[in-house]
Amino acid sequence: MSAVRPVKAGWYNVFRPWTLHGAVVPVLIGGAVAYCEGEFSIPLYILVMIASVLLQSAANILNTYGDFKNGYDTVENETRSPELVTGRLSPGSVLKAGILCIGIAAAIGLVLFYYAGWPVFIYGVLGVIGAGTYTVCGSYKYLGLGQASVFVMMGFLMPLGTYSAMTGDYFSAEVFLLSIPNAFMITAVLSGNEMRDYEEDKRCGVMTLSQRLSYENGMKLYLFESAVSFPVLLILIIAGYAPLCTALAFLTLYDLHKVIGNSRKAPSDGKAAFMLVPLAFRLNWHFGVLLTAGYLIQNLFLPW
Image 1 (cartoon, rainbow, N blue to C red):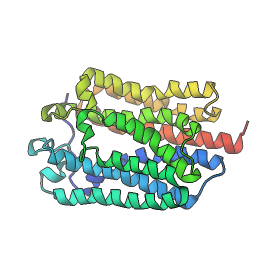
Image 2 (tube, rainbow, N blue to C red; image 1 turned 90 degrees about the vertical axis):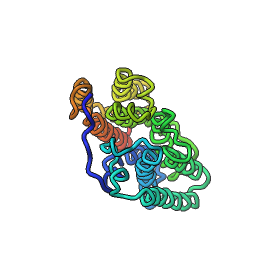
Image 3 (cartoon, helix red, strand yellow; image 1 turned 120 degrees about the vertical axis):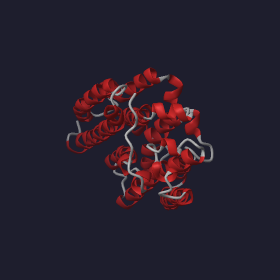
């Protein structure tokens, strides 16, 4: 497989803002259900969105710090996260930035706790633990648990936490079911990241889930996680657990086609390997927005 395309070192790459839709889509889903139930606060919703983005940013930042401190990012391997290995940024400043993001998110969580009670507090604590222990204070990424964490944390806890902040309830079956397709798709993004970095992770000894599966099986998992959301959504619609208009998300089958076509070139084409992640991001973003839009259209304008 061709080498991973190098990136420009700096704070922009550390924060990875192009990944933050992963925190936005779950909040859209949870907020849409709460809004249609008539329990919605714009100020609280904005706070939830900010806190979710900050936790995602913290995970990104601490990933850079953790990979460097654990010896996985080196001068010979600076295409991954060049900020620390090249000396562009100091480890201390990156660690402080990650902690600051978690601290602000935690402060927002206390405000949400004041207004919404214990349910949102529990979701917030789980979110802080998930973001803070990815590559530091536990480092479950190196145990091959990154994809499982994304599936649970971003797939379910974020939308349920958003709903909880709006309503004060611990759980919503509707939010949970609507979140299943997105849970697979956002996990596919991390799977694509692991496949893009497969050779470098192998050289450095980073034992992600994809490393444990082999390249061929890791790619199969990436495609499964990208594609399974469509039959899952179809089943939810047929069973009456998702509104008919959420079928708008099927428009993104074109995006899935691009993902599949690109995956076939990735083993021997460096550009295609690099695109494993952006194409998965695009699929997840488009699918999540259209799913949410369809849900709102059905419940607000076509309630039949």
